[in-house]
Image (tube, rainbow, N blue to C red):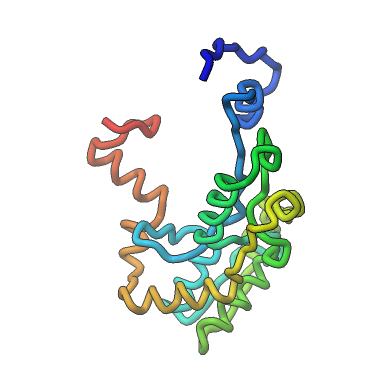
Length: 211
């Protein structure tokens, strides 16, 4: 591999994205690929209980009620963590011409869902639970429906297999198996609370660097 000279990105009035910085360095020896994952879901030992499907399933299992505090209309594209891993693998194995200096949304069109619809899927996965849409936060401005056509065309071997219903059932089963509690969610599986805990223990600085 020949040495590659360091190149300074030209300053712009607005902040540049990391993808734009990678593009500046893309050449014959450096093959960047950017993956823009949809909202992840799925169980893991390092659970995130504060993302939409994981959170709603926890409410269904622990409280028997799925509470949606927005009006339920915002869109969320969902993708299982295992399908995200498959996307990474597909990019690593793909021909260079298919992925070089490209950005891909990771997910599938069928899993673009409104929050109210996600809540109904959770109710199906957790029999006996009910959905309550309070609307107290109004229309959540964080609403986005994503086109996954590019990754489908470029990586025909990448075929997400997990549906929202599959993931909700997996989560409900795992939560029961490992006896999930509200205290566990608060103290261990909510990102902001865990970061505050690390800072209070003196293990993490205010700018989120390890001490």
